[in-house]
Amino acid sequence: MSAPVPTRRRRRRRGSAPAPEGRGAVVYDLAGSGTPVVLLHGLGHRRQTWYPVMRELAGAHRLLAPDLPGFGASDAPPPGARYDVASLADTVQRMCSELGLERPHLAGNSLGGALALELGARGFAASVTAFSPAGFAPAATHAGLRLLAAGARAAGRVPEPVRVAAATSPPARAIARRVLRGDPASPAAAHLAFDATLVGADSPFVRLVPRIASYRFASPVPCPVTIAWGDRDRLLPPSGAPRALRRIPHARLVTLLGCGHIPMADAPHLVAAEIARTVSTAEHLAAG
Picture (tube, rainbow, N blue to C red):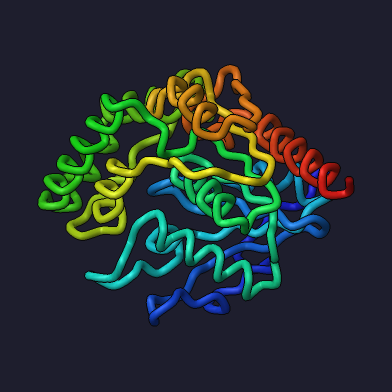
């Protein structure tokens, strides 16, 4: 039987994990019990994207799903403060330590996958499961991300009602379905649209996109690692997977058939199974 979905009232603690230097509160959900697993979302997303996976894992794991600073219900760092992959990793590490989660297992998608690997490289993670992680894209994709950053800055100067109307138009919805879902025609993707409120002037999304566009991951990761990529990922293409394997040679490489850039939405059972398998492997190795 599946565990209940975490809710805003169920075991969520707001404000108990302040970001450093007075940067505001980081909101998160805690659910389940057992081996600790931290779930990190991607750029422009929020912790609720992990709820279907949490249903699958809560019976055997203590799960922490935060809203990264600037997204969901978490406060953004103030203007001028450091705001990049390293600073986000610092925040996640500090929050885990304050909650008593020492060397948890980490799983992340896109930006969250990069954060999980960065923390693994620091020796903070017992294992890492990264889904379409940032930091391994070919040069053409990084060039596209730089164009996206420029476009986001330009869109931020457009009045929000105009941006929202454009993003919810049929052509824009069709693009969103194709970019973000493995099967654009699935009923679950029918009402999908880009969130135009994310690209306001100096918004967290606009501030972070240039950092992600220039980010490369190139550090050794001592713990067990799984790199999983959807074969229909059109945002960060699967061509990044072999590059990830070259940089982390001991990683287990998995292809998620039929999945796009956000596999938690396309196949939460597959995502949960890969996390559970990585955790089990790490626990077995640790036991000797």
